[in-house]
Amino acid sequence: MTLDPVLFYKAMADDTRLRALHLIVQQEELCVCELTEALDLSQPKVSRHLAQLRKQGVLSDRRAGQWVFYSINPNLPDWAKQLLQLSSDENRSWTKSNLKRLEAMDDRPARCC
Image (cartoon, rainbow, N blue to C red; front, side, top):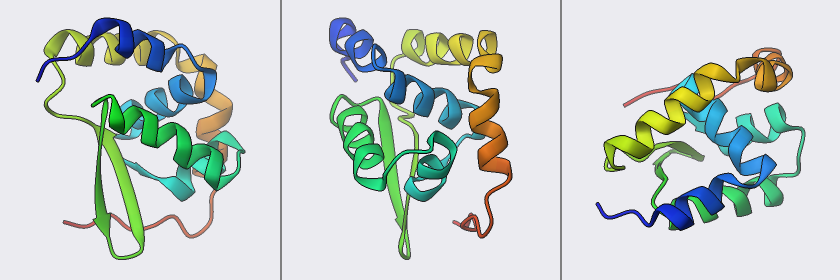
């Protein structure tokens, strides 16, 4: 996969998209409803940001019933995966409150497949 580094860094230059990416890296996979809860934002806003990340090739999605789950695109170049992992690992305090909201969420969708 060819990834334009300028577009990649622009995608991460937004607070909502970067927080979502960090949470997805930390949790491996999240659905829109989980990100909506964790980020304390409306579903349309979260979905719009996820669509931008998917369009740039940073995220992959999969459907499972009524849920759409997002994960880091496995075809991302290694440098991009490493950068996302390092950024997430080194800034866990930045997403701490988001993770607390996520962990307190009732009725999180079950993972399968």
